[in-house]
Amino acid sequence: MTSKNQIKLPLMLSFLIFSMLLNSMGAIILQLSSKISYTGLGFLESFKDIPMAVISLFCVNLISKTGNKNALIFSLIFIILSCIALPLVDAFWFFKIWLSIVGVSFALAKISVFSIIKNNYKDKELASTISSVDAAFMFGIFFVNIGFGSLLTSDYAEYWKFGFWIIALFSIATVLMIRPLEIIEIPASEKKIFSGGLKFLLKPKIIYFFIIIFLMVLVEQSFNSWLPSFYKNNLKISTYFALQSSAFLALFSFFGRLITSKLILRFHWFRMILICLFIIFIILGISQILITYFYEDYKYILVFLIPLVGLFLAPLYPLYNSEILNKIPAEKTHYFVSIVVICSSLGSSLGSIYMAMIFYHKMSYFYPIFIFLPLLIIFGLTFVLNKTPITYDRKR
Image 1 (cartoon, one colour):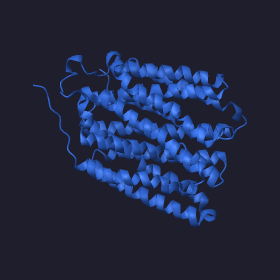
Image 2: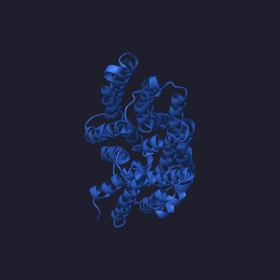
Image 3: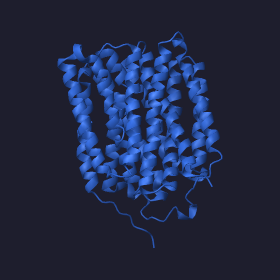
Image 4: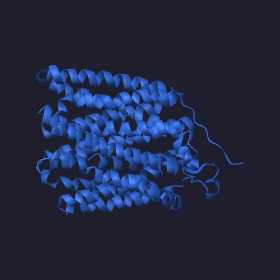
């Protein structure tokens, strides 16, 4: 019988792989910004997010038939083929196709991974596993920014797209690890225990959660894809150090989620979220003051200060997810996660457009303030989410 730790490792590797792909946008934007306008680059991410959102609902029945493990393997095979092809096609239009493949594959993978976690882990163990898997996601951001940052400043910068072949190798290794695993699947006889169809998605607590997730991803996207451009354009820092800003952000985020996977076993999720949000507000406030009044004297402090947000921002997404996922019936997990993917996709796409417009209108000196605003809404909704109960009716 496969142990839970044996299941957790390939799930973490899967999220690390998709993290590297989804968050390579910082490097792609820097490389293409001399040829493509910021407005055009802002919409480039939509080629990933819109297919991800659309396919997430349609693939639910497919995943139910093939099983979560097979669906995850299929998603990684798509990534292997697309990453091998990317450096061989020297055209901007192929980035759009490649991003669409990444988006569709991630939709399959995320629904599969969250369903595997739901079926194989319970309660605080589930929350801890989600935090561990999401920690791997943050380490992927760190790894891809360090990797591309080093490659783009080396003598082989013109071959930067071949870095995606390394991701293809990771994907092959992960597929080989997943294949022999014995993973619990929900039997077909148990998939209609709860009445009401998809009406459970209209529960007030679920709706508040979806809004929070949308805003959370919008904020994370504002950091992950656009922080390097902010450092390069506003603080006049080199391309290498601009990319390392995202690497530091990811490294702090990795530690934030790793620590959360331990603390959630001892502390209540609501208290942890409030503490994290308060500290984020303080860091963003100090950063904006330094940018506005002490820009020349403290710009290199900002290189480290703003990424420190990751230590407290990263725990929020898995904490919200685990709180609601624990309350969702197992047979509804596919549909629930598909809506999470849609909200995340819309948040990612609109987050990139939101930042692109800010940069286009030359308002990026107020970068921390524009991130502060959606976090205020999240702060208010968190109180409502905590106070709202959730119940389900069973068929008898």
